[in-house]
Image (cartoon, rainbow, N blue to C red):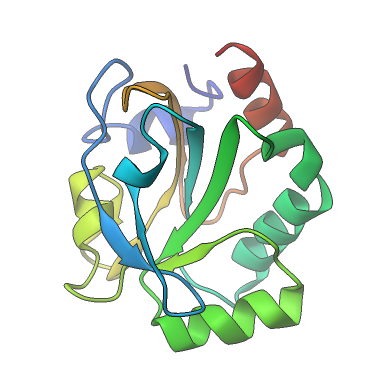
Length: 165
């Protein structure tokens, strides 16, 4: 499932497909704690939101939109995780400044390794592209969207995707 735009269709080439087993990851959050995809297996679905850079216009607006509607996304059965290649120190300041209540993970080192596993790393930019994955409690990708760098994603699409679980 995608949002249907031409930019998204072109961007999806190489992204982890729906139905694939989501690659395991172990990343540091904004407070220095380790977060693993396996932490949620059998318990919660995951809304995994990759974004290029903290403190940039579109990325900030997307994360603020998630926070504004966090009750629509995160609950007893779903965990929201934001991911960029920024350091954990940058993620902390970003999450504090924007008052983000969900984990913001650092894919800083090895640089972009998790984004690469999910097929959303932009080698030229050196950062994640705007990829979002809904991963079920069995660790299977059930939905994805990948927008070109300048194009924000629709948080409404997340509600629909999570509702289909």
